[in-house]
Length: 316
Image (cartoon, rainbow, N blue to C red; front, side):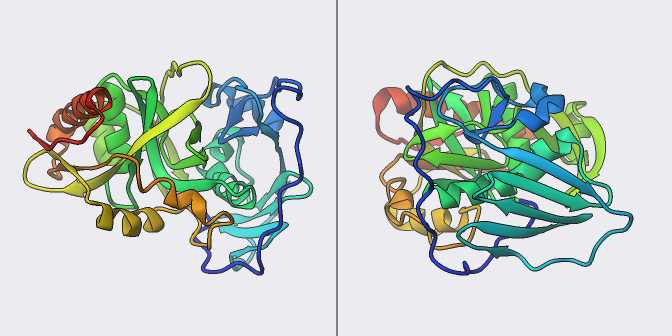
């Protein structure tokens, strides 16, 4: 996630301002992602979702500089966060519900939506006592499975191969959870060159954030109403595709490592609720020609798991 992961907050977070219940609040007409209504990003509405209700309206400002400024130190406090980005810096203002990109040049709407909005989403989620994971997610049997994977785990390729297996994308980079309610992210996957060339997919959008990206815009048909998290998938490497249950003692280290912000959770109970969910590990070779087979294996396993209610090992 652009901006890095800060090591410690300035001080303890304070409660989020009380909002009207979703049933009483007017439905936003702005496109949304991560539980944020984003009226300033209409130019990238194709990458966002229609309002589902209960979103926090969030403004985006951009300030153009003549030259790249010196890098800033990552700081996340109770009302304000300052995060570095490649061409400048990002300020997230809790009380003003605004993110300001000060850069040379500032990012366009599509670049804000992905990847730069992820840092705002993770910060706002932390302020609101929600959980933000460095994870992708897909819909299986009407419920959502999170796919955890740090940089180098092949997560974006795994997400695209799951889309090719017929699953609907919920998130590619950061997954925001309100309890077990899932707040969908942008409708795109950014591949690396090798994956883009293998699949013959993606538009070369150049270097955005930390790397060069080939963007695949994904048509999404999410179920109506709230999306509920069903379980978690860890990614790993092996000689052959396989899906294995993850024992409970191994779940907590992977979960804490997947937190989008390495800060003490504002609600310490929130991550703990995820430990009891079904958790499996997808193992697969580092060969792109096997990625689709591994995705189909996982998709079938998760669908069967939802029907049976208990994990069973499955090898390819």
